[in-house]
Length: 94
Image (cartoon, rainbow, N blue to C red; front, side, top):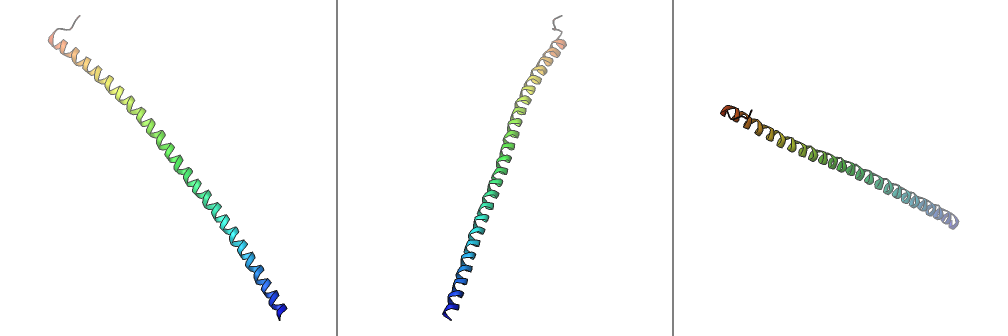
């Protein structure tokens, strides 16, 4: 009976070791997959952030262009108003 107990004991110990190894392997795989998922998500956020930054830069450039166009239109309108005033006053130079 002692021999069966020792065989049974070593079978249980062997099974326990295999179970521990399987759990350790599973934990390492889950950790690796989790790390990879986090870095992928971080990469997506970085992509979104860089796209937003590029869009913001483009919008700011467009805003500058529109301000310049508005200022130019304002100057042209001012000149046209002056020309109309001179024409109405009869003081336009010929």
